[in-house]
Image (cartoon, rainbow, N blue to C red):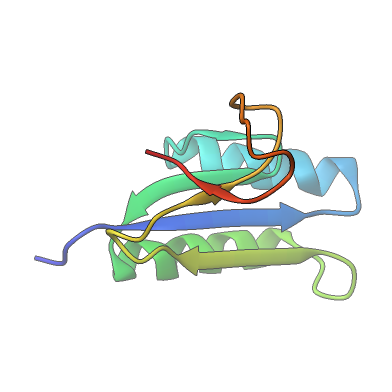
Length: 95
């Protein structure tokens, strides 16, 4: 049995209809996310199947897809309004 690993899936779809279909596929996989970025745990086989499903919906000339494995145990750097920071614009590791 393959072990599930953390993966980030991000997309930029040019047409609303295709964007809706991509989001629907990701929801069928029960992947939580925010707008066009999803974080989940998948095996390699699951990631390949999801990649194939999304590729059938997307227009390769105008749409973009990124699936990136996240190395477990690495510190995650974040920036934005999600958490209050005293670092004044510098990257900081989440705890």
